[in-house]
Length: 361
Image (cartoon, rainbow, N blue to C red; front, side):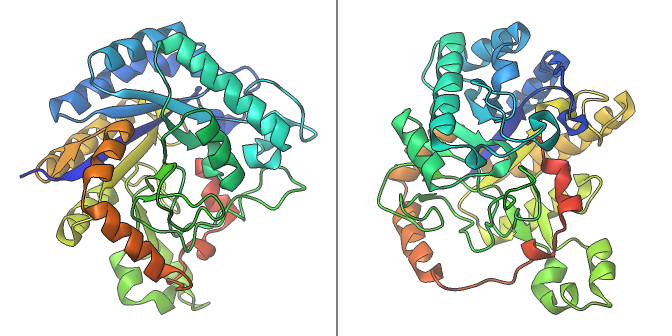
């Protein structure tokens, strides 16, 4: 019986933002119906987390309105601070540096959140409740601003990953450190988003798990003479995502992670990709139609595996289910036990160079 919630999230954004374009196109919107059909084949409901340029795309809006009207998916918000209005320069070249929203003054943060929220709600005719931060950069101020705008669910946390080596503003401190954050869903504390509270904004972390080799022999990832070999054999972290840290492509590793997770009975499974990865030449990872077909073949295998023990939910549906679930109380107690307890740290082993694949995300 399918019991574990499976949430598909799509960072829905312009074409090949890894190339840092100044004129951003949205041709990938036309390639989303193929992915939607695959999801519906297995009863899964994607969450399209849309940024500014996609909210302005008539092709995407027509597609997203249909998906939402049929209850076949959800539209949420995704914010890239460097091109989301109001535009107030933060660096010498924001389109090149792609600064994090949390690096801007609070006034600008709030205005950007409000502007894109209103745009999405006007374009899709429905309230926005789900969100993922651009480049995964999230903090307590950001969470409070989302609550002020009526958001209910966030999915920005990548447990075990330290983004401080991935720069935004070159004069800043890099991204957030999620090394000690929970892997399970929890309501964010307004003072410290790494710990649970009794209510508010629900955090649904990305599925990121230590690999089998890391679990068995974490020390080899820290040994100067061995860590390069260990990373090549098996990256310390596995992501439920087609392109993961330290791996050019992560297609087979996704299936391995899913099978490993089934034995561990997780609270949820969360998959992500970028909308532009579904179009040839839309990303550095999938450049040809043949590579896109290979991606779809692996996704079909993954979704078939997950459909045997997972059921599809949107982020909004998951929040409603989580509130009613006995897991919620247990997860809060689990979070309390984790406070002050450090887990082995694969995230700190990741260089900024290897993290850059996620920069537009």
